[in-house]
Amino acid sequence: MNIPVIDIDPFAKDVLENPYSYHEQKREAGPVFWLEKYKTFGMVRFAEVRAALLDHERFISGRGVGLADFAKEKPYRPPSLLLEADPPSHDQARAIMNGVVSPASLKALEPVWRERAEALVDRLVEQREFDAVRDFTEVFPMLVFPDAVGLMDEGREHLLTYAMAVFNAFGPRNEIFLKGEEDAGAAAGWVAEACRRTNLKRGGWGMAIFEAADNGACTQEEAERLVRSLLSAGVDTTVNGLATALFALTEFPDEWNKLQAQPRLARKALEESLRWDSTVQTFFRTTSRDVEVDGTNLPEGSKVLLFLAAANRDPRKWDQPDIFNIDRLTSGHVGFGAGIHQCLGQMVARLEGQLALTELAKRCKKIRATGPVVRRLNNTLHAIASLPVAVEPA
Ligand code: HEM
Image 1 (tube, rainbow, N blue to C red):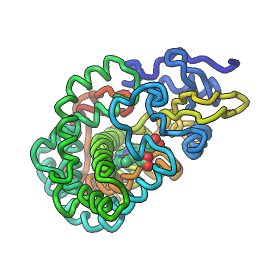
Image 2 (spheres, protein in one colour; image 1 turned 30 degrees about the horizontal axis):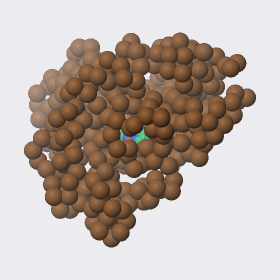
Image 3 (cartoon, rainbow, N blue to C red; image 1 turned 60 degrees about the vertical axis):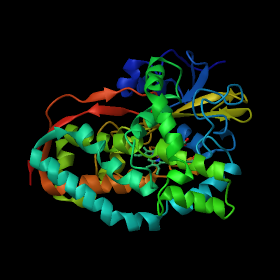
């Protein structure tokens, strides 16, 4: 094959810690390259990544969106009916979920979510110093999301451990994956129980999925697996998306000043932080047939690693991409993906982010980091374990 070969392991610890310093070489190598260590193709430029995401017929998800090819290996858990499925079954599942996680249901939840954001931020601002992750971004989603799904009260702390393991599993079976798996056994058992109809509360999204099943939209077993999708994808993503927004705002104090002056910019701040440092860094696709990308043939059955985070910093698309600028027009960023698999929960994430950042901006004049950011390494997510901050009340 006459294409650039890249020796960097995208799942090595130092790369996961700070992926951005490694993207440039890949981006300059060409629109498509060969990742020697995993014998897969890779793409980092915005145009090709977005085109592949939109081309779900040739770049399929049903053979897994991780390194493992479900056509050759048994999936480590029953595949997701959304993320790891192709049309037509994907679209049927997605239609059910779009009806459940709907704008109307979010509108109804918003006042309670706001109250909870206000109370939490009031308490943190009173403290003056706190950990932006452990005390805020890991707390707020857990105050709103499990109740929205209607989860049982006991054991909710398993959600974060479970999600970390799920996102690790999209990568190779490296040390990070194995460590996550050690912790995840009990969490997976809890999640399986939590998805059962008998354990879901009335009025939540979980029960609404079972009600759709009662009306013939899917089987009861499928309903359970759709609830599992909410639990896999709905917590750790928002925890870290919000953590990254706060990290960005401490790194770029002028952007905090803009937000503080106009808290209604909260949504834009979240969106720009997802572009600047995308929580979901990568996902794979598999080619369903021979596909040509810029003169290179990707044979049928090839795994292709799509670097969403790198695409979101491609200078061919973004002006000064390494700068976090909340005035930027971010439309088209692929931090929530693109095409038929585009994030089901993006409105949920946006609402959580908007409420958390708005309430903070209203109450604090300044925010600054009082210690270094500590990363939690994950094969898919760019995650933060700790970010100590101090705030000056408004
Ligand atoms: C900042 C927070 C979030 C980020 C960055 C994020 C990111 C993503 C991305 C990049 C995808 C595309 C996957 C692909 O193309 O293969 C996706 C899909 C998905 N997300 Fe999110 N997500 C977030 C929050 C949420 C929340 C809160 C939920 C649940 C309410 C959720 C549920 C899902 C589901 C079920 C899918 C699969 C959709 C499908 O395949 O049709 N996500 N997300």
